[in-house]
Length: 207
Image 1 (cartoon, rainbow, N blue to C red):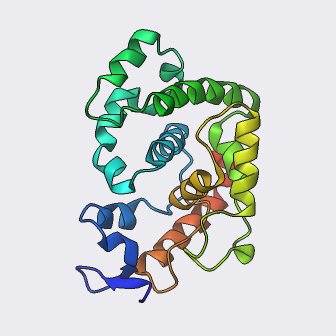
Image 2: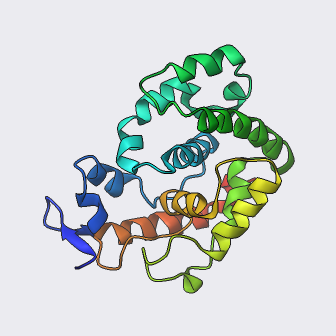
Image 3: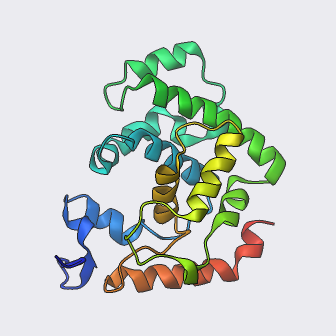
């Protein structure tokens, strides 16, 4: 089976984006484009943690509910969540009501605050783990990498939870640390342009 499908405009896309109607827009406008906004990075790490054992379609369908429930993933706000907030989240049918995963987001928000105090931003820390594109496996051929293992270990050492190597690799794919669109995907070139523009401005992003 080929790695691509034809999109509604006739251009080739990664095959996975044809699995559900809502995947196409996510694939074309978000997946793989570089992200430096700390709240978006924290959101994606959190949602990847929620996805563990579930499908991304389930999480994507509930993403706006998650954003509302978790203060748009502003970790300074989430870090102050109380037991009452936790109880409310466990009653919220719009999200995944998994106590361990909800508690992990609150815990990770506190760890994110500590990290930002040390490093200046979540982005500055995370982007240090961007792999050398020349060392990457063929697109979508693996589910972990040396860099995702290293970042996972570093986050766990700092007390983060639900950040295993596979979760972190999916996060790196989505946030643009890797251009994992397959070679024939029309969006791959768009992502590469965005990544090059990002690299040229990196000093300003992390100053």
